[in-house]
Amino acid sequence: MKVAYWPGCVSRGFTPELHGSMAAVAPLLGIELIELDRAACCGAGVIAEHNQELADTLNARTFALAQQTDGELMMNICSTCQGAQTECQTRLDANADYRAQINRSLATQELSYEAGLTNKNFLWLLVEEVGLDALQAKVRRPLRNLRVGPFYGCYIVRPMDQLAIDDEHPRHRYLHWLIEALGGTVIDYAGVYKCCGFPIITMNREASLKQAARHLGDAIDAEADCLVTPCPLCHLNLDLQQPLAAKLAGRRLGMPVLHLPQLVGLALGLEPRQLSMDKHIVRPSSVIDWSAAVVAASAA
Image 1 (spheres, rainbow, N blue to C red):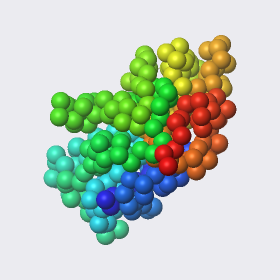
Image 2 (image 1 turned 180 degrees about the horizontal axis):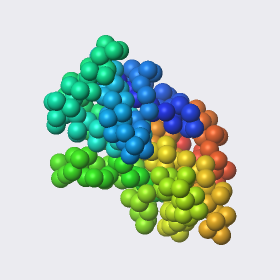
Image 3 (image 1 turned 90 degrees about the vertical axis):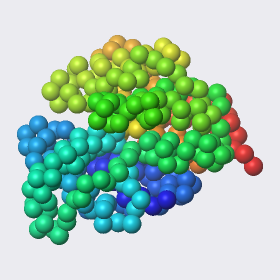
Image 4 (image 1 turned 135 degrees about the vertical axis):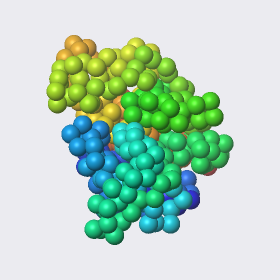
């Protein structure tokens, strides 16, 4: 399967372990990544607050670049990108005049967006394109005894109608299903669908970090071994900021937070070092014996 791949700006900057893990996991899943290395930031909803047309133009440019490839669809590894891009695409596809206006701006780069591009987060692609049965068949190291707390983040589960979350596509359950398909145990806790706090960190740092600490603490109290998230911005607030969050909360945390491709990579037989788990602030190997206590031996 060929996909036009938008890694997002955060995965190539603040969380390069995510970008590298996706590159390592893709061939094991039969996915060929056609990287959109000329694409710009999606705006994360911030640019749109000040200039909606600029945000839509940036995203339309990315869509147009994707349509120039021979990829079957466009894939991203950031739920914030998914949310911002879906919102933009909804506007562009619904209004031909507005789309033409945006395309006039893109014409200087010989680009044009045509309505109808399919853009899916890696999580959605795993369930809807690869399929959980096919994924399970590729598992070489079942994640037995691993208690995983799913952390969806905001942008990939709301608004539900815009993200096409319905009875036919219960995308708000996909992370749960994926953990189980990899052999892990799903741990439900209060913060599964809540905001990580990242969107307000520049405006109210204390509230943001307390919010992150609350989710981490709830997962610890529910006896999760780790969290997994499809959003690098959530990862920044939950992992990078975790020591500061612990100080503000006045409690010890130490909860490993995995990127989605890392969890998948472990189950497919890759080693933690191949997935750059040593780059995390809370290193999974410092909390969990991945080789024996939690992760079952790789199949021969």
